[in-house]
Length: 233
Image 1 (tube, helix red, strand yellow):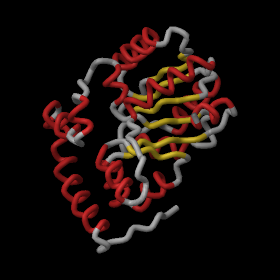
Image 2: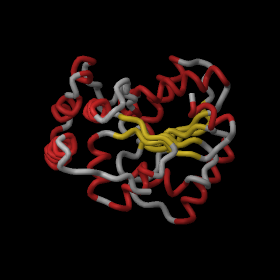
Image 3: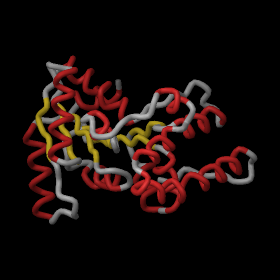
Image 4: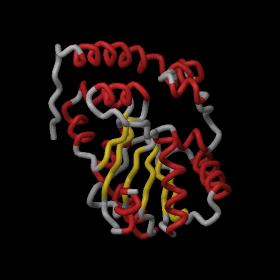
């Protein structure tokens, strides 16, 4: 696994798990597009992106979602004795998350867990966070601040945080038992967004109403050859 190799080498890297929301945020913002395109690794989190990649010439592409990536990386880290850390979520969520992971992977070394305030950090606070992460020895840092905040945070801290940073979105809440995951059949059919909307309508309806129809329209135009999108770095 490339993430484990980077962690062993003590590289400072960041990984994005892209879904429709992230793609459309990138489409709307040149600055955020550069953040995503500059990531060391971007995985398709969401079946619509998987289907598009298959149609565009990657026939064997599978889904690599943040909630699934987190336990897979933790399992590999536990096997190799690589310390991990968690940044984001509430204190209660982090407590439930770490308890769940230690129950699944008793040998997992959790070196760091921090719930930052829901506001921008001062320069002094940010420097303290960086020092604490680096001094903890964590070589893989899961970041759960939500898109696009977590991707911007990781990009700003590449080269400062001596760990592989992985943006995992709502994975903290899923594995802490705070939010229900969509049934497997809904995930396979690309309907996870509908399940999440039913669970959190007040928080998510604007996001889905803004992004999903435009993504479908742009995807159809690209497949028909009516639009082309160049990779910008």
